[in-house]
Amino acid sequence: MTSLPPRVWQLDFSRGIAICMMASFHFVFNLNYYWDVPVSYQSGFWYYVGKLSAILFTFIAGVSACLSSRHIRRGLVVLAWGLSITLATYFIDPQTYIRFGILHMQGSCMLLFPLFQNFRPSWLVAAGTGLFALGKWTAQLTGPAILLPLGVTPADFHSLDYYPLLPWAGLFLYGTALGKLGFGAPTLQSSPQSFWARPFTAAGRHSLAIYLLHQPLLIGLLWICHYF
Image (cartoon, rainbow, N blue to C red; front, side, top):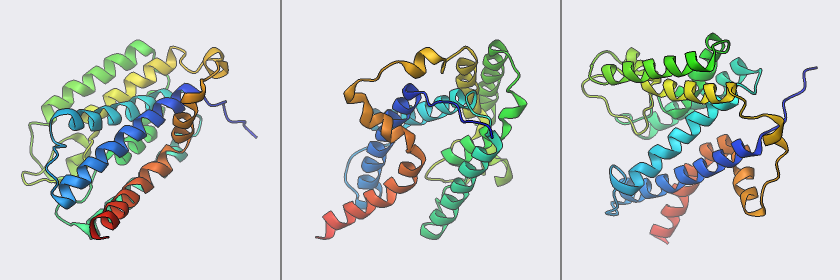
């Protein structure tokens, strides 16, 4: 039986920071989208909080891919949860349901990782940069919904969450390049963490569960506060 590699607390800590940022962004989003509170999430501070959380999640997923041997299994699990969110949001709002959100993107990156796992760090950076360039091009195109994973959208496309492989897989490959350069070495795994970092590290270890549960909980709490 193959033993799992030891966890790197710095990665869990970073995930914990990212999930706290995302929950904060979704709190503001809910206030504006569902209760018409005049606070902006499409520009300014809260917009960048949301985007930075997605950047952290994707970059860390790329680093973590170098420490795991279960890419297909992990990718299928994450993608399945993404599809579950698609189904749930379709029943809530068929006009803006999530069709290729951050879980779809990261699950797909994990499934594609074996194609890149033998690349040198410099090749990964070059490939990631190429994907970013392609993403800028595909973002200008319109086409059928089957091309959504590549950044090509229908003319009337609306989605509450959209993270296409082009360009976001490029960020995943940047993280993979860092992982190849030794992030996750024994010196990092064994280095002590401070007391204040432990709550974020604990949250990072359960980031997928928190991601799946935090929105229903936030909406439920806001609904209770609004009506009671």
